[in-house]
Image (cartoon, rainbow, N blue to C red; front, side, top):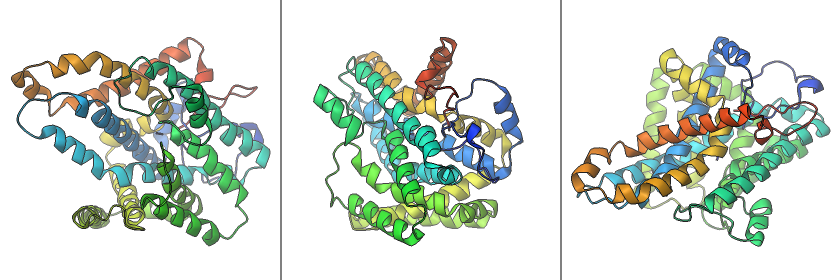
Length: 383
């Protein structure tokens, strides 16, 4: 689950004094948030895209880990509809998230090793380790929730090292920054091509991918593409037209349909290719959406504070699942019929709202160290 600098920085790399920021936008004051309202169209599309992506992350977890576990006895296949709908966003959600992460990482990757090692690599690994321990403790109280969890010291060690947990997005960013920094002088093709091959091999099931290793292997190419192709992606967003939106959305729908009809999800290269089409559509849609302030502003605000939602939403969902599973399953058919269609939307909104409330409460209790690497200069969590 979930990063990148809170805006696309077209200036030269910041001084080392500011380099301890990590890219999940977590603010302690309202000033930067208000100032962000004046950001460029390009920055807003990226933040809005992140907002949509984190909503899709939470919605998918709500559907798979809670909604489809409820005993629905309503006589219509609405739960199956939600499951199928959620699957259609799988090639879009994380590839787009990582592409934007790469775009925002472009300047950071140029900084000295000691700066990148602390502000990005150590920062993300720290957040991953802290929240892995919290998730392990909370998820133990909700054993009914179908999700990866460590149930022993050895399992916890495995999740800390070689098989990342549901928090694998943080783990991946630390790894991806290391790779990007280590290969910064190599020809881009010599980095992107192996990353694309790794993605295709993992998606085809040709590698052992327990836990969340599949996502780890499949998305490196999108992070690197965002990093290397930043000017082209910005230009693509800046010139997004209605005609391109129609073409890219149509291409995405056709690609999904063709993949489903042919049963080609595990054909070599197909999933990666469909994800590329999805990212092209996602950037175009976000750029067009940014023109509608009433919608894009709240999405962009959410996109700038994705860290608390990403790290908190699973424990919140686990506790809500424990609270709701039996009562909702026990409702009569008529009562279930009234809520079955809107349940995932309502629960997704509740989970996001509670996650942000928990974040504010923890900051009020001076627990900001849960969202930033402690040190003489506070790491800004990011978006």
